[in-house]
Length: 63
Image (cartoon, rainbow, N blue to C red):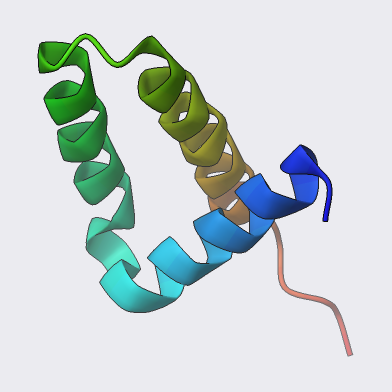
């Protein structure tokens, strides 16, 4: 699995687990990682939040 595919899988899992509060959960996680000076972790979750934003902007398929 590529890193991009991993981020998409993580975003989908977070959305499934946390629903409407997924975005806030990721922001909290980024805050925790930043407090720990974990730059790689922050970068990873910023990529995930980008995917969550893209998922929220999608429109359902027309039937």
